[in-house]
Length: 299
Image 1: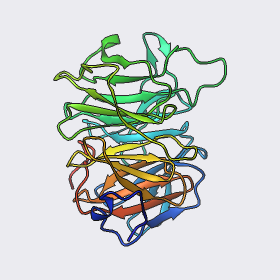
Image 2: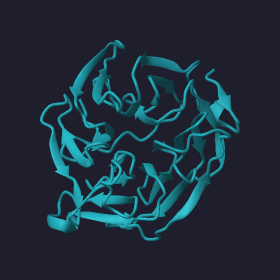
Image 3: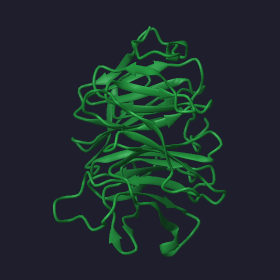
């Protein structure tokens, strides 16, 4: 059985006998995304490359000079929308890495900080976090690090809206199964915040509430975040993947060899979990399914 720390029920959810390493030898992995053909896209931030891990575990370079592309997901138009950490913009591409397009890089005429992670709502609206990791000294324009919502159906300045601006380091984010709650990690404060989401996509209770505090006992605050179909929250933090019940109770930690950065659900049944952790990519199977990106193609 995969190694479980602080076990309070997590071991009953994990099916894998061990944590499998799919590929290694990278510099710093991020942004995993499962494709219906069984392959997995990952970003290597430090080498600025997008890699594809094929079902046979072979690896190919899909893109180079990615401007430190980070979090990515499928958008309503079938393309992959992704964050450019060093490029300081949101972009999109075809699933094969071609036809890269800039979506936007400014808010109210001011340059974004450093988009980090992204999630899409079922109505096609795109939510992303904007910390300052990729901003060079002296080039930061915005006085805050926040969470934004982009509505592709709208035009002009109204298409991109600032939802909340009081984070220290906003990072991974995900919706509850009914999309009435948005969870957002604050890496600097070592906690996960939860926000009530209105029918049109606005946050009704900003600044929200603290859903969970994380105390790993070593450096490494919450990074990526995902949710399963039962509403459990999975957070990449020092020690491994921390799993919480919807009420905030910690079920346990799926230990990883190195600090994990992000995670994504995988496999047609949604029960695979792919984890990026520094120079490697790992995989585990769960007994209950997670939530695949809303617009994952069907083949």
